[in-house]
Image (cartoon, rainbow, N blue to C red; front, side, top):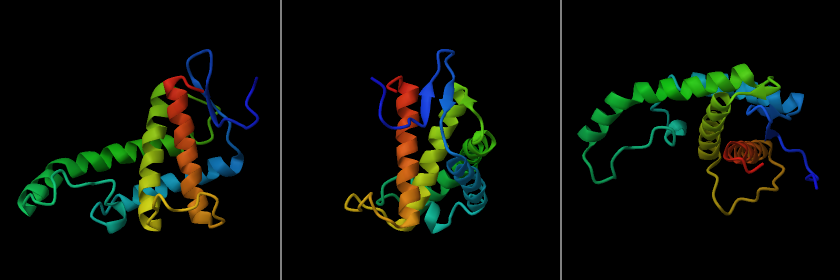
Length: 155
């Protein structure tokens, strides 16, 4: 029996992934990617802290943290930006390759982390809120879950 709700991502027989998103949902994804990519120009911004977590626990001295950031931050910014580029460029596509969908799951995760940080989301938050920013956060989470399920073959 087919599910009663629309699955936004499903694997096709050819091994690609069909997207079933509304024009509005696609436009939102298309607009969020460049916004976060622009924010990545300042990786030290407080709202991005979840994208650039410290490599060591709090007890390690600042010099080791700075050395890690010096060695890794540019690469992380580049990888985050690349995933966002794929999301933006393919938001209106009918189908995605496995590599493109893998980039989507990473980009959706980056977006959720930043939005969740700015909203200070907790486990106690109500996912049925009418607040548009929280609705966006939960939509991205649902979409990310569907992407992961499709990649795992659970759709």
